Figure 1: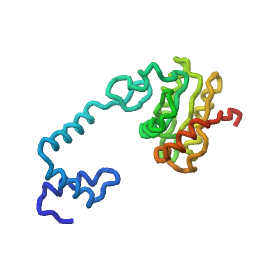
Figure 2: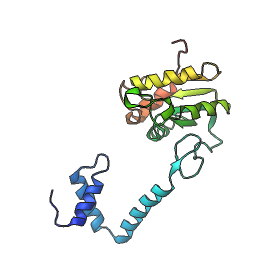
Figure 3: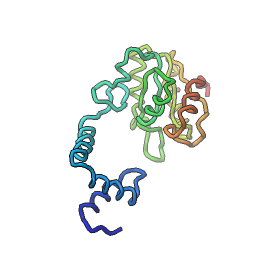
Figure 4: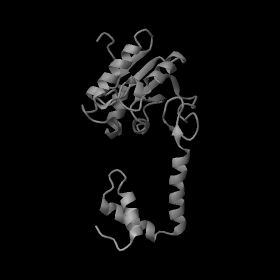
Amino acid sequence: MEFSSQYIQQAVEQLSSLPTIGKKTALKLALHLLDAPSEDVELFTKSLLEMRANVKSCSQCFNLSDAEICQVCSDTLRDQSRICVVETVRDVMAIESTGQYRGLYHVLGGVISPLDGIGPAELTIQELFSRVQQSEVKELIMAVSPTIEGDSTIFYINRMMNDSDVLVSAIARGVSFGNELQYADAMTLGRSIATRTPYDRTI
């Protein structure tokens, strides 16, 4: 695709580097920004720069946050006895959209995958274990993607909790095997959390 302006070309190249944005969509967005009032474009740019500069990981659960502790962790009305363990912040957003869970979260940052060079040390598993030891958590709800790597991660965390009284449960398999949690519809995901089952510690 050839452009009569190098500036439009640069904008299209940057926009098309975003997930799911192809060259045609990127050109449409670039031309829209070009026609938009300059104040709107400045506000758009400012919001992106401020997001990049100010959003950080919650020091407790590793969710995205504007402050040291995120809004979920600091909400005293939430059930402090349950932690929903997920892979990514996108999963937190997906579960929150169901409106059926009012406990806390812990973002692992992925799942154990030796073939990809990801072991327990590359995830926030030790931080999760420390949270459990230092709080009155009664249940860990494992809401990771139902894949072989996800199951291995559940198994590892379950073994770590063997000497504790914390119940480790897994969401019901309403989510198709091999699918990522964030892509499940809200009704299926909400039902999977509500009908979670205890994880068998004898396996």
